[in-house]
Length: 219
Image (cartoon, rainbow, N blue to C red; front, side):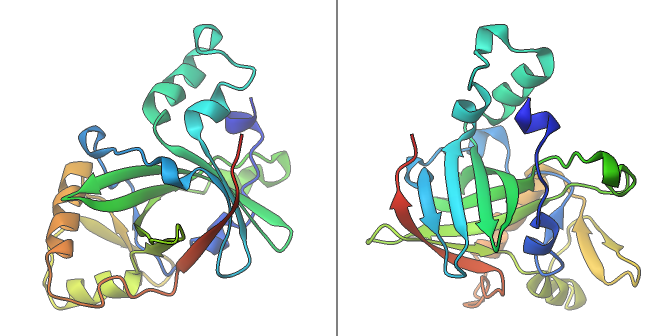
């Protein structure tokens, strides 16, 4: 099946590289998932990338009805049926993601997760990769455009250095200068709630941001 066995990882490592906060666990729990139909469709972003967004349940059930699904597919279906399957094309490359919409105190977010890379040529690279979650704050404008902003690692680094937050994490990378959050999803939700209540007006200032403009509806 394409979703599990032949997905191109493309430029996802570059797209979500060192500038976004990464977590081992999802930033949401099942109780905060809040499906938002406004994302469905084809979009262009402010950097001339093309996004195709469909509901994951629609993608995984193509020629694969629920009643005939294999165990692994059925597990994926149950876990991500209210998530999005996102393909982003940019300069001839593609990256595929699962994005799960959720709400905390009526604020809207996405949990981004890169989909599996399978390439026999690079299976040694694959064996060293750890797939991580990243946090997006999104706002739907009155004109239908959607602003998406990733939580920036520089913001979190400052909070850690100033001892303004306490959340489980590890410092990673060859220079141990990157942060990987290791907290549970429940603790991550508590962090988001506190972060949103902070007085920092630039809390979502980030270099990883896009404005999405819809070009068409998907089937």
